[in-house]
Length: 270
Image 1 (tube, one colour):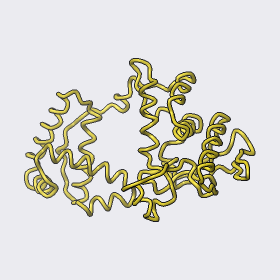
Image 2: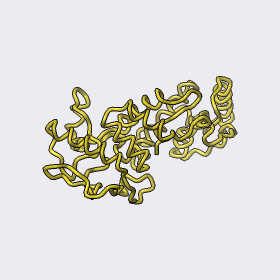
Image 3: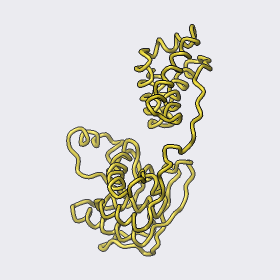
Image 4: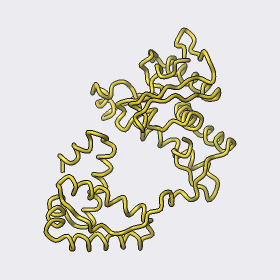
């Protein structure tokens, strides 16, 4: 299993970890282990097919959507392919893309203002980058805080005695390494985002941080314990934020501000 996980991690550790969790939950429900599921797929594929069908039926009786159920099979499909096992006994489902988002819509400007009022200054900047510049949380930070947008990616920003923008709206250059499509692109920041970001950067400087072109746009707060030891690793020592930290506070504010019957995820802002 480790070789399979490492092979997937070469492209994306987030994807590898997601598939690992999916496979783990599925095997636990089927009362199988990584070795026995491969053996069953080879020696008694009909038996494995029946187990998967029963598992899918049980989840659907519990009210789960086809799109939810089908995700659990992705990890097993990948794992069997890695072991060169041909298996076509996965249940036939009809997942409808976006079915779980039926009550979701983009917040109005008034609703966005209500969300922003509930956020810390750092999270307000993140939310405005998403809502006004169209950035994903994975551009501002990363799965394991190994990368993120830097102040150098804001060419209109001036880090002199007084921090300011030479032009507003200001340019935001997203490097290919942070782009989901692996293609660099340019977007812009609004005057509201500029004001919030300048206040945030001044707050960081006043707290003793030395801001340079390589500084993260969204920086980690003070850390301790495991998080502090993790920052001792050169890969994670530059002060970037994990994507989860960016998303969580915004998620809570969206949940509080959402009108009755409306569901908002952080990604609705982007």
